[in-house]
Amino acid sequence: MAVSCEKLHMDFYKRDAVALAQALLGKLLVTKAGGALTAGVITETEAYMGVTDRACHAFGGRRTSRNESMYLPGGHAYVYLIYGMYHCMNVTAAEKDIPEAVLVRGVLPVCGIETMISRRCMGKASAHTMRHLTDGPGKLCRALSVDRAMDAMRLDSELIYICDAGLRPTGEALASERINIDYAGEDVHKLWRFTLAPDDPLRRYAAAQTYVLP
DNA sequence: GACCGGATTGGC
DNA sequence: CCAATCCGGTCC
Image (cartoon, rainbow, N blue to C red; front, side, top):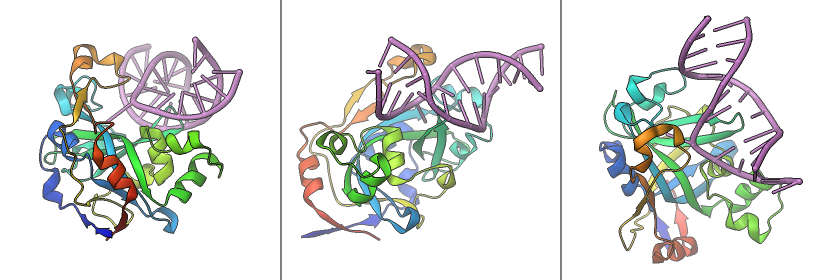
């Protein structure tokens, strides 16, 4: 039985990043880079809460060529290069000029898995690589071919979009501290990292479906 | 113009 | 544990 999906409407993103980060769990992130369709169910996110959040690239109203897309209305991609070799993909939240965003930290691969393997590890697919194919922000961008070319794109575009597959987490999202933001002072302790519970039945179910994508 | 460091990853 | 690798941001 195939699951039919529809792109999230731009209104879906008109909420603060903490609320959006939780709402995105279980949604499908889809790209069609180079003609190859790849998709994953979002399982881990982090919220970055704009000008007052020391961990946020827009803290204090910083606005530069790199983070300009954070100021777009909710429902756009904010993609940046990190450590000179990886990309991180964010979903903008809230309204235009409110620079809040949600970092996608992990997805469960569900479509185009062979493509992801070839992009991630030159074709070699050990049990280890399968297990860690898309379980980090840099890894999932590599697997889905998300890079600066997709920065500022609407998330109902042809090349990149997020859709609702009717998958609903059974329990509440697990909340914890955000990772690798030691420079953020007190804000390190904000519980703005959200994870789909490891034992949530949604994981098994989602992996077993076939998806009809828009 | 120089210098610094990162919302990461994988290999040693 | 640490190197890779390269902009962008900051401060001369």
